[in-house]
Structures are given as C-alpha cells and as structure tokens.
Image (tube, rainbow, N blue to C red; front, side):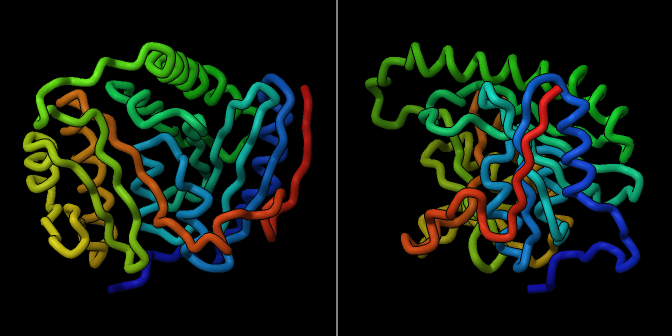
Length: 257
C-alpha cells in the first residue's frame, strides 16, 4: 500500500512549543505530554482515544503528522494537539474520550469533533474555550449520565448494537465490527467489505484520502442511526502495551493560569 502523505520538508511548525504556550492560555492547570513519532504507527497509538470522526480523524488517516501533544487538565479533561496538514498557519485540536467508560455509555452521544485553530496560541485558546470545550462538556455529561443509567438489555437476540468499533490494522486498513444489518449496510455503502478471516467489515488503506472520507461518511450515517462509532488502534503485545509515564520521547511540563 502507498505510504501516508508526508508534510512538506520546510514545515517549521513546532507542536511542543505551540501546545505548551496554548496550555498557558487555557483556563485551569494543564500538564503537557509531547510525542515525537519515531514510526508512523506511534501516531495511531497516541491518537487512539481522540474523540473525533471529522477533520482530525481524516488528517490522522491520510497524513504522517510526525508529532502530537496531549494536554491534561487537573480535572481530567484531555486535549489532543497536532499539525494541520493542509494549512501551514494552523494546528488541529481535538478532545480525547474519557477512559474507563463502558462502550455502551457512548451510545447516541455525538462526538465533540475537533477544530482547526490559528498558530497564534492566544487566539487558539479563545477558539478552544468558546467552541471545543463546551461541546466536550456536553458530550462528557451525556456519557456520564449513560454510564450511571445503563440501558436494560434488549430481549431480542438480533437487537441492534449501540456501537461500532473501528480498529486500525497494521497494514493501514480499518476493520469495523457490527452484527446489526442497518450498521452493516451503512458500512458497505461507504466502501467497507466483509472479510471472513477478520470477522469484520474492512476498509482498504490503499488510498488514504478516500479512506479518510469514507470514515467520515460512515460515521455520519451511523450517527443518524443512533449508533456511536469509536476509532481504536490495533491491540499491541502485552510487553508493549504499558508505556512508562511520560512515554518514551515525551517531555512533560505543567502550566497553570
């Protein structure tokens, strides 16, 4: 399969510096974890909990971005920061899904999709505070409410599941698991193909741009059906599953305002 699209060699944007200053401009106390991707697979590992099925998900699927940063506030709010691959004067910022919540808690919750922000951290912080964080708070409240009031199991054995999990495979393709006919039809309509060996509907990564667009379109179709979609990285061997804190290659700084 072709390699993901690379950024221009003369791209001088620094994710770490931008994220650090951004954390100083955002309300609250934040810790910044910066990751330089030594291999492209690390991009997906660090982005596996990004709560987005729109612009950020498309950028991750199509480009090798080279670096990212996680901003973690003292109340547990987490943000993902990376380069905007199509606009040299912008970065991408997305919320990260809460850890530990059962998949069912995300059912029917619209992803608080990330936003493009200017490379000026002060202006970027205003956009994040006015747009992304309020939508994140709404989505998080819905997930917590669902977690505290889980739906009763449906008696029908063929009842529609409330979530489709899409997993990045090592070859760059995307495997989606569902047993519900409406969800399967939505996946197939956007180019997913049933793979008996994987027991999943698989979307080829041969054309990363087409793949990114298909992921967005499939997510939108599933959302209209009331089915949540979650993107996950492929499971790693146990020996690699636990990273030290901070991760290798990461530099951590704490900022308060």
